[in-house]
Amino acid sequence: MDHQFQLPGSYKKWTYGLIGAGVIALLYGFIMFHPFAHAGHGENVNSTRFWAVLLQNSVFFLLVVNAAMFFICVTTMAMGGWVIAFRRVSEAISSVVPILGVITFVILMCLVFGGRTDIYHWLDKEAVAGDHILNGKKGFLNPVFFTVWSAITIFLWSFLGRKMRSMSLKSDKDSMDYETGKKWIWDNTVWASLYTIVFTLTVASTIPWLWLMSIDAHWYSTMYSWYTFASTFVSGISLIALYVIYLKNRGQLTYVNEEHLHDLGKFMFAFSVFWTYLWFSQYMLIWYSNQPEETKYFIERIGTAEKAGPYKAIFFLNLIINFLAPLLILMKKGTKRNWTLMTFMAVLIIFGHWLDFFQMVMPGTLHDHYTMGFFEFGIAALFVGLIMWGTGNYLSKHSLLTKNHPFLKESMIHHT
Amino acid sequence: MAGGIKKFVVGSFDDEKVLFPAVKNVRKAGYKIHEVYTPFPVHGLDHALGMRETSLHTAGFIYAITGTTTALTFISWVFTKDWPLNIGGKPYFSLPAWIPITFELTVLFSAVGMVLTFCYLCNLAPFVKKHHFHPRATDDLFVMAIECTDKTNDAEVQAFLQQAGAQEVNVQEVETGWWIGTYDKTQKLYKEEKGY
Image 1 (tube, rainbow over the protein chains, first blue to last red):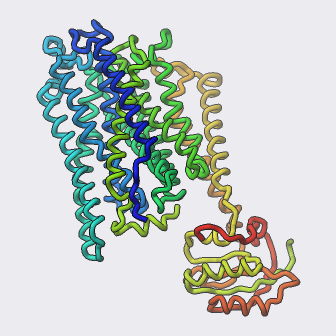
Image 2 (image 1 turned 180 degrees about the vertical axis):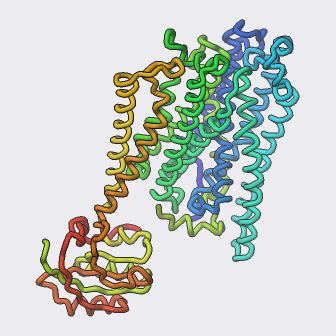
Image 3 (image 1 turned 180 degrees about the horizontal axis):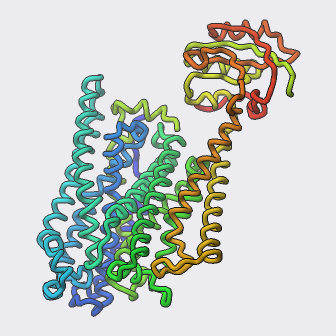
């Protein structure tokens, strides 16, 4: 068995189909929505829609693929052996980070240097000067810091991720004896820790503040970054699970069985509950203290007792998909070991968190003028297609098994 | 069952690697294993013994939803009917504020309920004297007890166990009581399975 995967025609068809649909949607938006029209707040709804949708999708999918590398790094640091049988899959997904990173960076730069005050209110110099709160945040929310920090972040994710992948690929060449194996694991642990430190300083703190929370520039929540992290991490695990199931269906990944699927299911279950914990913590503290500057965030979404907000349905659907469904369906051992149900749950969770990002970005930019139609799903299809393209490339180029990994045996005999 | 006497052939093994094939061979030969006592949890032994899956987690789920309903009904009754209080101008029916307590009661009910159920299923209780087939089962020996019926030739079973690699083999007659448990009802017949 050479563990070499040939991309089947249907995979390529879907990849190019999705990218094609996405490009059509993008062109449609480009022509119809006047993306470079004057960008005052609420003046040109379609133009705002174009950028808000691009921002939501690029950030969401970038953070999802980045979560795959985080998964590799935390399991490396924890000396986790069970993931080795499908480690290449997570590597393949994380190899999309540079591509999506560049795309996201271009979009962010268009927002900042195109003066999109409808997306980022803090770009409006006059408004900031006359605004006590925004003036106080000026040291953090300004175009220079935004640009430099975003660039450094995307570069470090790509660079450190690439380092982790290249070490793994190098190990395929020669088998390792005890001493070289020990040294290799140590090197991996060092680089994984570096990645995790960068991850903590970016995904788990500053990046969601900059890219997403600054849409509601007056508002802040200390839960926000963890909440975003939980959202993307559980989607990342779901994406890994989807690929594992797909490859298993194709007769690949010889050493992956129900035991590995069961543990992936546990991760999906646990981090869905973790997401809910953060969701609730953010909601309840704001609800309880009832300060106007804080409740504004939720009033924009679910409205008040007298008047329902425009995002009420999405807001609660989000809670059902991301909390109730995983809690009740993934609770049973049988579900986590069932390939079909796991596929269903993985797709549902990814869609649910896409919806979560939708209601994070849209209320602050489009208010009640949001639409969810061809353009929104088209752009999502574009990013899904790009992920499939990059992941497929990596999977078909390299062996699916990290055959000299010192923990491979541990993964093969894994038993939950 | 109370007051009856049951006969067991008991074999002690000092190695997992010997124990697993022995369990397989004993079950294959058609003898009925009452239980294997081990000093520590052995991965996959329950599967090798053909025990059915435990339903402890189902019990846990039922206790948990009991806790959820108890919390929600009690708090909502207190705060809306029995003793409504105006707390910070919030409505009497304030679900978000109750979620932490609901969560705590859910966890408490399922945890305590599962511990008690576990003790019941394993026949553990204060002051219950249990029969030990071999004292070193809590130290370094894996002790297999095979239940004899009136048709069993215990000399043959003893020879079989010896041959399977048992270090010590003997026959014990034990007074049955509720300690004997329900294992005999939960064991499946041996069949060849993938991966074991």
